[in-house]
Length: 123
Image 1 (cartoon, rainbow, N blue to C red):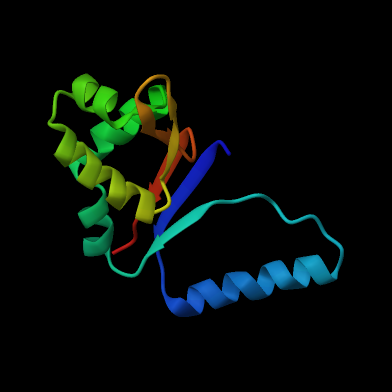
Image 2 (tube, rainbow, N blue to C red):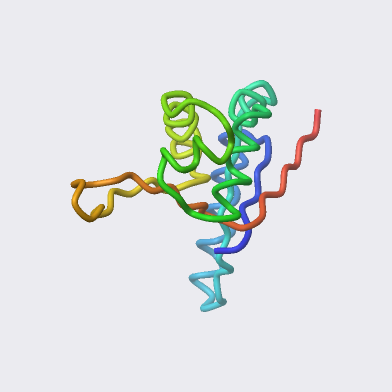
């Protein structure tokens, strides 16, 4: 995936989008691949997109890496980066997977879901 769209929306918007997709599928029309992250309130969006988390996402987008290496790259402690990764993963912006680390067991690696995020807020 190359693009993640973020917006403010309601439950009604969610179901309206679902009905449109279902109608397109019923008509045999192709369904475009989209990844949409919707927040109910602008404050919820701002809670996820803090300056430190945006910086961390940019670092992940530039290169997938382990939590330890990401912490070094953004010059933050590992625990803070780990907490922020949990928020970004719950929001659907990154995937954190365990992979083998030669001689050291497992290491967690973060990868961006999309190369581009579009924020759209209407207040």
